[in-house]
Length: 137
Image (tube, rainbow, N blue to C red; front, side):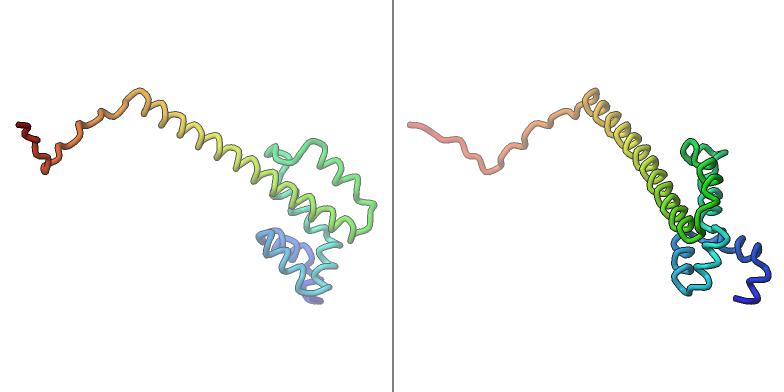
């Protein structure tokens, strides 16, 4: 960690390239990595990188809140940013799920409408081959 401590910006860039699950797993490996991530506000930068304001994905005022919270302790900010990242991931997943449901409902509506407009013609029942007419006296 001493060697990487000299190149903190390099280490920070590598951490920001990781998938969130991998970043979380790496954070749990040792206390030095966790302290570095807290000190360098890795989750804050990951939140800003993955849910950029320019892309319209982070809620209104989140960037200003992130900038105002610099005075808090690094560890509490670390947890805060991590929670915000999780919330943004859940919100993005909800948007994707809503879009999927809408498109699925559209497909089902079109399919039902087609079935209504083009009903299948009913086939005549097949005659029974063993049917023998009854003879009456």
